[in-house]
Image (cartoon, rainbow over all chains, first blue to last red; front, side):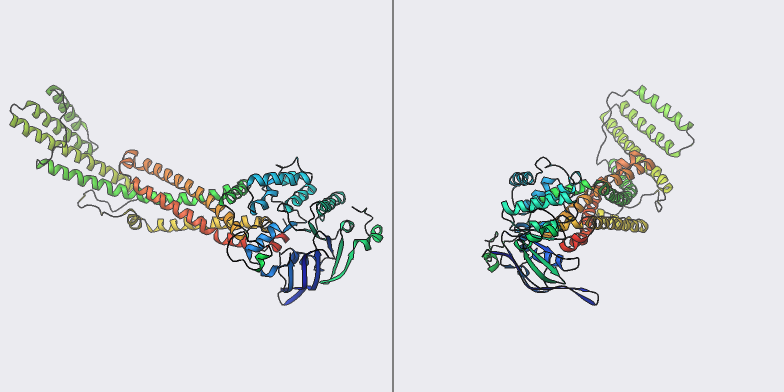
Length: 245
Length: 346
């Protein structure tokens, strides 16, 4: 039995909007194991993003517990939460969120600076990471000089900056065309296999299914079903017609 | 294990550390970068501060100037008058008798000056001065003519007195000319007769007492403009960068770091703007006053020490305001929930 890296227990999340209460999550139990590549799928409004934010320590549950690496997130103070975000979790966003005033290398080294690395160490490590994602020749480019796919590669390198246990990718291919999206998925899979980092994505993208070890389907704030890829391979042709990565 | 020593609690045992605070140098670097990128807006914000502070500084300099011009010459007159009294009493002899004068030279000077005084019709001040100069030259001739030591000593005393009298005439004449110009500039309540010493008081007390109510009001408005300008600029800066802030928080930035960034940005803009505003305000109002009252009197009577004091306090006010105006925007930026921040469309 592999170690569990993220665990949720009866997680509920209620948003109060004026007089009405919106139940985004109605009790989610989920366990993610170290080294897994897991995709959270579901239609808009299913609570997918809310669950994703819980797992990333970006949001706190109204009820229930979220454990990251066996630590209850709700118990953490601001300093510990920042530490967790800095070292344990790498974030990738649909809109890339590369800091526009910084070069690719500066974007990648920023979390290292937050983690206390010296600038020399950070520069070397950052250059290595950018090299790994195929941007070794674009270290000093500003975000506006990079294509969407390249920006997302910078974001992947940045998420790997402090050797996190988990990478959380929120619709990482949502703003990319088909081929670029496929490249990004392959890169994530490669990181998953070589660096043994756990990858959790929230996505609509059917291409993601073939890369995932497990798929968690969310519907109406609950886990609808969890599928393993081995079960899914039979249907691969039907789902996306995408080759196994 | 926890990075920082202290309480080893259950969480820490499981490997959760506490995020370290970043050095200022890094915050400075990032703040400088974001200002550079938003150069256009930074310049506009700085310019508005420059103008507001220049306005405040010109009010302060203007008050200092008119007060200096009203008070310093009066002090000067009283000092010279006192000097004259002491010379007459024989207590002091402050002037050195010029060597190498000939009687012929002096006689020529006397007759030419008498002639000029008779020709001069327009300005009684000039006539007065010419007569006094004639008296000095006559007294000097007496010194040269003296045969005995006794006669020489008496003549020398007379010469000292007439020299002191000439000096008094000079400062009084200058005072009268100044009054004419001050009245043209709307400064009233001045009399030609200087009877008592102007009050000795601290610079700030002087400012408080001498500043006109209208100027005081305008000064307050200038400070408020400066404050609101920085506040607005910082709010804009926060709004523009909500996603950037959210991203930084996701990458492990502490709230304190975000606050540092905004404080640095506003202090830098505030101090640069304030400094430039002080220089601009001072130079312009000094030049304007020199144009109106003449470069000479302004240079000799202007209270430079006082102006320096108001420059320093304006620098302090401007910088404090800019830091203070950043408090709310910085706090707001730091408190942004990363989840909310990420939802914002650019």
